[in-house]
Amino acid sequence: MAQAGAGGLTITEVSITEKFRKTYKRLPPDIQAHVNEALHNLMKNPRPASLRFEKLKGYRKPNIYTIHATPNHSHKISFELNGSSAILRNVDTHKLIDRQP
Image 1 (cartoon, rainbow, N blue to C red):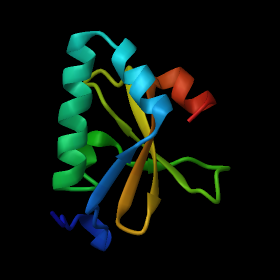
Image 2: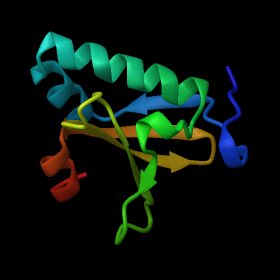
Image 3: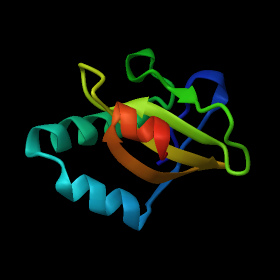
Image 4: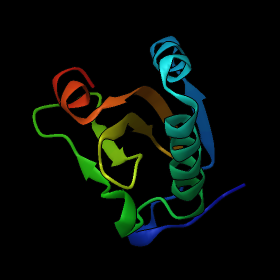
C-alpha cells in the first residue's frame, strides 16, 4: 500500500499508540469522521496542502509532525515518521496538541 507524496515521502504503514486510541474514542462522532478523512488523505498523499502538514519545532528524536484534522482547524493529529511508517501519537484540539503532541 505504498503511497508517494510530495518530496518523495511515502507512508506504507500506520501504527497507533494507546494515547491516540483513548483520545480518539473521546471525540464526538463528527470529529472522528473528520479525523478518519484526514488520515485517509494522509495515506493517499502524505503532504497535501489542505492538511497543513508541518514539523513541530523543538522535537527531535523523534521528529513529530502534525496535520489538521478538521476543516475549521480546531483539531490536529500528531505523529512520528520512522522511515515509511507513521506512528499516530495523539489527536486533540489544536491547543492541546501544541502543548502535548
